[in-house]
Image (cartoon, rainbow, N blue to C red):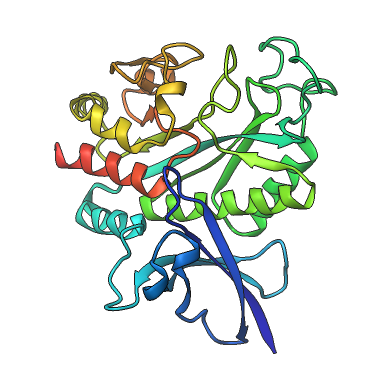
Length: 332
């Protein structure tokens, strides 16, 4: 007997890495082994030194196939010495997580995305635009919510995969949705978001729909797409002063975070459409126009977490979690 293992990794495409995957049949009772791929076809190696290594890092059930089949998130290594490939951002996050393990950091990420079909957002008319934004957020009903069947299938698949899936909602722009994962540790967060993204693309593929993680999928007076990141340490979950200190630390390294939060961030963080401009930094309670929002109940309870509203939908979750972890925990 055997099972199918779908090996998933991030490639070397710039400015935004793409998901790649391929299937290996593995003998039952055996863990997915180290494997390889042609890095010259994924922007990760030259043709004369094309071999790259896939090392399994996170394994979960594959809900698209079922039975004993598995999804396998992999780290990319260099074949010459098995060291992390320059595109392997998971390795740097793992090191940071080990360094700051005593802080007991938790992450939750809110992944926004936009469905496209026939060159336009799902549900949009062939010519012109839909009615202005307003009625679509958390909407119910034909003509308002587009793609719900696909969204529900994705949620069910994530739950069957055993992910820490927390919820879904329709977003402000028609054809745009969001799902949430967390709160879990930094490496688990990035691994699970990677699996959830892969499942979303895979399920949408079966519907003839594509998924865009572009920061500004439609130009003009339409919301962009982000990946708001909720974060806490043990100290923040016990003391409001630690939350304020974390906000101050994030402000001190604002430019470094903006540079690492995804391509096209200047198009999305304009100071409009529920964003703070990428060129400034501010934090505040209940302020969705701030860089960092402190939820109202956190301010009331004087403990909890913060929401970094700056990461793009197309961000690398390993990089985002590493930056926040290093910035906040090194400041303590």
